[in-house]
Length: 156
Picture 1 (cartoon, one colour):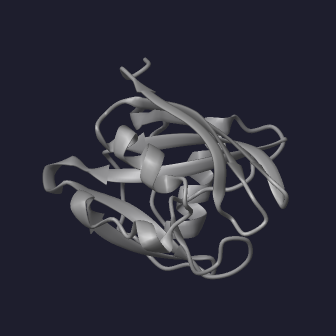
Picture 2 (cartoon, rainbow, N blue to C red):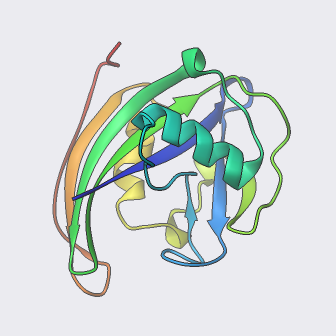
């Protein structure tokens, strides 16, 4: 299984979350958090911070980053474990990269119809300040055929 990261910036004051439209590669045309593969000699958290900077030009302090979810995905096209991180403090303004076009969404306007099918099940848990744990199994057409998701009090 591949280890991947996903990063959501949350503007608590305005109840908004920053997502990016994937412009190329796997998941192109879908909104998602910022993230990707963990490189050698970096922690999973460091990978999430690096990916946020590479894809949206934003910097976060490692001490301001919280792990909010661990999700397992099984599909004919990929098997992976995704570690989801959030931050409410950052430096800079979001900028479009070759891979992602960032956009802020109010919590009640998240475009789940243009996202992966699993996102509508775990993102609300994370935005409610809980820790999400779950697994999703997809068919070849990217439909969920099995899932188990739960939210618990935030882990420290």
